[in-house]
Every structure is written in C-alpha cells, then in structure tokens.
View 1 (tube, rainbow, N blue to C red):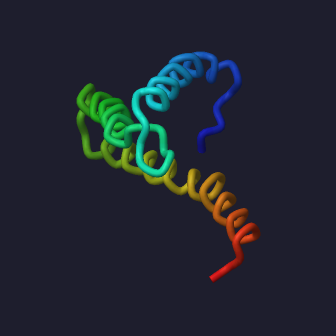
View 2: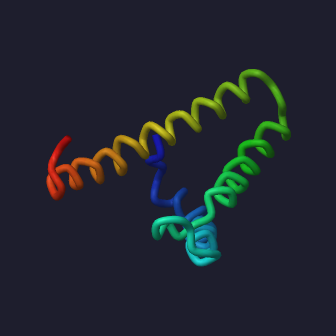
View 3: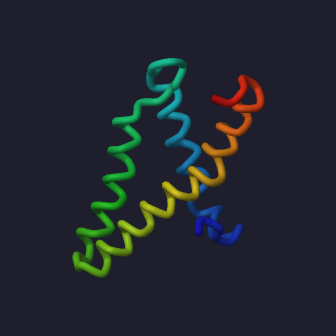
Length: 94
C-alpha cells in the first residue's frame, strides 16, 4: 500500500518530481507517450537491485517482488482501469 504519512512523503516527493520531469522531457516516445520506458525500467531496477544487494536474502527478494507486484496492481486499479472505463464511455464498448 503506497499510503505513507505526509511527513514521510516529504522525504521523497522532490526527488520523484525531478525524476518524472527528466523522464517526460528527455525525448518524445511513440504515440505521444513522452517518456522513455527503458529509462524508467533502469530507475526502478536500480532501486530494487540496490536494496537487494545491500542485504541479499530470499526473504528480502521475496518482499521486493511483492512490492513490485503490488505497485502493478495498484496502478491498474487506481489509474489504468479508470482510464479504460472513461474511454469505453467516450468511444463505446466492443
């Protein structure tokens, strides 16, 4: 669950905003998708790999995989599914 306290968010929000700015403004992607997916993959992978490499263990690896899966599921639930429902209303269903 990505809902940490507002105090804790302040530790990360500026760095996250800077990364997002760089990803969006680096180069235009396909179909107006203005970010480089490989760059985003590199950033996420680097964070996960470094967290694992600091104290490698199956338990830590398993927790990291769980976090990645939850991030995926939360994005689908909170963003992509809502967007798809909007497009169905705009353009009609199958």
